[in-house]
Length: 227
Image (cartoon, rainbow, N blue to C red; front, side, top):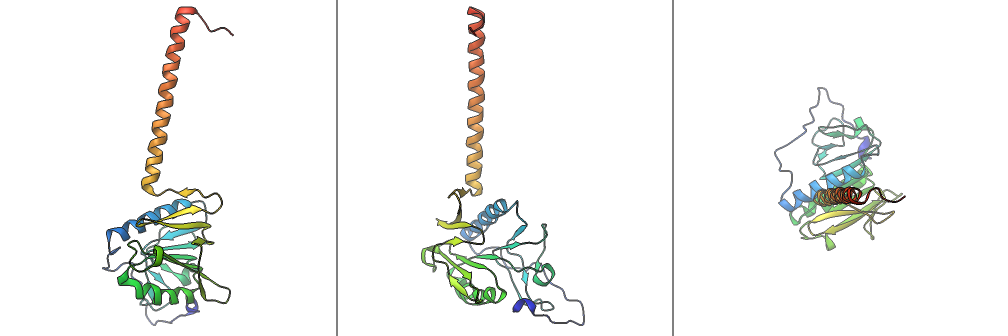
């Protein structure tokens, strides 16, 4: 497998953590990445997992050119914390799931090169989301690794790795729990829900104050309420 490849260097090898490439090619792709990163980070917060975005994934020790920068990658059973890049041989784990926000311009790279690479690396699930609907039918395409070591297309848009249903909604990728169908709120929806909860709590507190004032007026006029 690719994960076992190693080149023995005579001098110390430098593995860059950034390049001059933009984070995303369009505003829609950027929002899709940010929302997915935020939602999955919150969802997996209690698990031994990390979610990295647009950070170099190095998969051959001693060969810095053997790298990709997935839009989203989820890795389980590793130490939590910030990483400048991800080296498979140091961490001992390959990503379990990778999501690429694809486009017509990146079709060949995402659908051919990366699909073949992630299959060789034994990435459990590979998803392509097309925010603009430029080439992917219904915007979403997923693959799951089979026991024989090859990818098979996912036909129901359900991620066994995450135990979530993936659903395109406009230019965003949304997630629904497989056990109860509950939607994992994107940041804007989460803010709206918190605002609604705050308003409801304030309204209830105001109602309680008004009720207490009414009771005070009653007591002043008629005495205590009968027991």
